[in-house]
Image 1 (cartoon, one colour):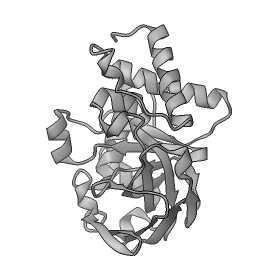
Image 2: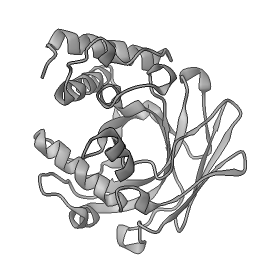
Image 3: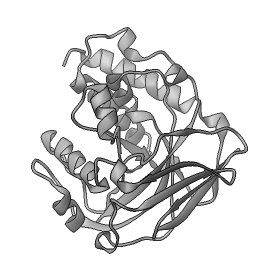
Image 4: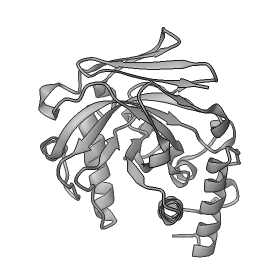
Length: 262
C-alpha cells in the first residue's frame, strides 16, 4: 500500500460525502497517482465501515468490468468488486429520485442468491452453481461520483464501483433450470429497445463473475456468505437515464423488472 490510514480515511469520507449529497468530484488519482490496488480497496472498505457504523445494512455484493474486451482495454485480468446497500434497494416498479443522484446509468444483470458460503482460492463455475439457491433478473443503477464519468480503475474501485441503486424481481429459477450463457436480455427505455444481449457477455458465463469474487475475497481472508445476493455484472453497455424515463428489463425465462426515474 502507498497511502497512510489518515489519507485513506479522508478519501473515503470525501467519496461517501459525494455519494450521499449527489456531488461530483475529480478522480482521486489526480492527487494520488501512486495509490495501488490495495489502497483502492482499503478506501472502499472504509466507506463500508462508515456506513455500517451508522446502521446501514449491506444488502449484497456486486461485480463490475465483467467483459473480456473491457478488461483487456483496461489492462486488467479480473473484474472489480463492490457492495450494495439497503437504502439502494428499490422495489420492482418503484421510483428512483434523480435529485439523489448525479448522472445515473442502468445496466441489465443476472442476480445470484447463494444457499451456501463460497470462499477462494480455486473457486470455479461448478462450485458457484452448486452453491446457488436461485437466480433472478435485476437492474443496477450505477452513478459514478467522478465528474462526467471520467475515472481510472483504481478510482472507481475506491468509489465502490459506482454503486448506487438496484432493482430485482421477475421470476426466480434454480441455477440448473436455465442456460445462463444463452439467456436473452432486452433493455427498454420508455417502451423502446435500447440494448440487447445474452448472459455469455459476462465473462462467458455469469457464474464466472461469482467465482472470481469468491477468489478475490478468499485472498483477503473473506468469503461470500450463505444467503448473499450478488449482482454479476452488466450484460450490455450502461444506458444513461433522466427524469421521466421508464426502464424495463426483460430476461428470457426470468420475466421482467422495471423502475421509473422521477
